[in-house]
Amino acid sequence: MSGRDLILGRVRRALADVPEDHGTSYEQAVGRGYLREHGARGVAETVDLLAENLADYRAIVHRATEEELPYVVMRLLAERGSRYVLVPPGLPPAWMSAADPTRVHDRAVSTPRELDAVESVVTGCAVAVAETGTIVLDGGPDQGRRRITLIPDHHICVVRVPDQVVASVPQALERLDPARPLTWISGPSATSDIELDRVEGVHGPRTLEVVLVSRK
Image (cartoon, rainbow, N blue to C red):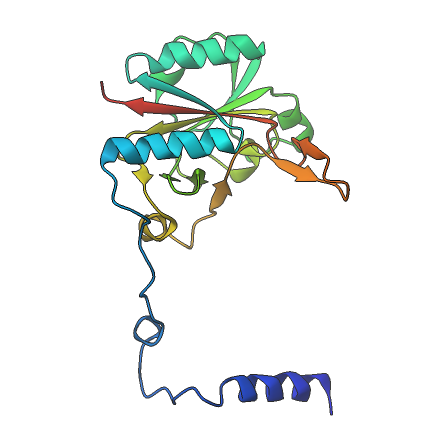
């Protein structure tokens, strides 16, 4: 018996008790009875839960109004001593209006070595999930290419509150286009060796700072 026959045989046995599909769509065939969110929370409570879970993943959380945001970004970059900052093409100009570092624009021709010389990157996001403390990027104009958020050591991510905050992963998936390059971020990049020694900054930024921005 070939490996192919063995695998197909196992598939047939696994499907033996499944009724035949007579035109039923995937959405109808797969049950969706799971919870869409865990517990009932208001908007403010959902945002507070997001902040709590972001911090639990070792992200640094800040809160600001739209008017305060440029000065928060300026302060965070100054505290880092960043001389160069990556800027996606669609980043709102006001976000960087008070900052001094030289702006490096997201370009296809930039090499990994050139990007590695940039200390910080500032982006928006597509959505933020409160229950998991996860930020999702989808390569939108205010986020840029995936690599610009993976190579610099410091990522400042702006989340618009409450518009971009959802309670759960199912709610986030409803807002996202699966055909886009989705990056799910739960805290700064980290890994552990066999002795469970945590090392940050291996597969992405060592420091993630999230600014929750409200209208007032």
